[in-house]
Amino acid sequence: DVVMTQSPLTLPVTLGQPASISCRSSESPVYSDGNTHLHWFQQRPGQSPRRLIYKVSNRDSGVPDRFSGSGSGTDFTLKISRVEAEDVGIYYCMQGAHWPFTFGQGTRLEIK
Amino acid sequence: EVQLVESGGGLVQPGGSLRLSCAASGFTFSNYWMHWVRQAPGEGLVWVSRINSDGSTTTYADSVMGRFTISRDNARNTVYLQMNNLRAEDTAVYYCTKGGVDFWGQGTLVTVSS
Image (cartoon, rainbow over all chains, first blue to last red; front, side, top):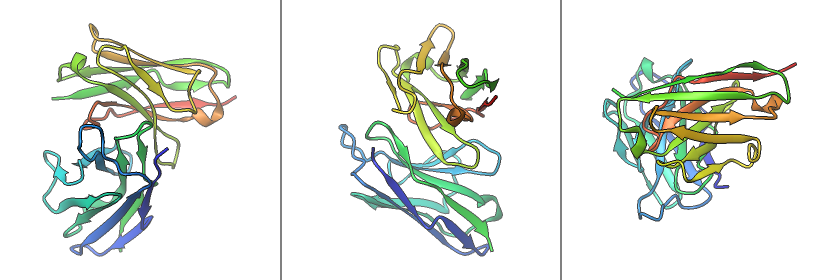
């Protein structure tokens, strides 16, 4: 299985400050369609996962523009330009190119 | 508005069975793959199974192969997960998600315990 490794696992951030989460995959998440199926999810406490970013850098509808995704090959990054209180939760990267699809361990974002 | 509503979870003894359902609305269900993903208490997300749009192709995680069966009824806009020979390690919230993983249900809790 493709292993997705996130860092850090816990991310304390001051309100208004930037945050960055790294995700490394053991294989490139490029699918046979030529697209890189690397996605980012947010899971707020007690809620279902919500997709934020798809195919590396595309923001989903309704996602604030303070969230951005980047990367290529096997290294990817989710950035939040200015953290707000509602951003508290766990963030997961996920590869959807190779079955079984796999998630990173999750990064818990907390407010300092 | 896309909606996915899971049901069928509950408490079951080891070795028992449950069938989960996920009722979909707000999109053309018969055009999409559907997936089941689970999350054990306090743990991360793990893919369980998927089914293609007409039900002819299914795949499973190794941990559930031979015990779980995914199916769908496109006339009812519903995907199912039949879970047999349940083990304690199957205890989790089970989510269904639409192909493309852009929408998720609220989840249904399965607890396997004596």
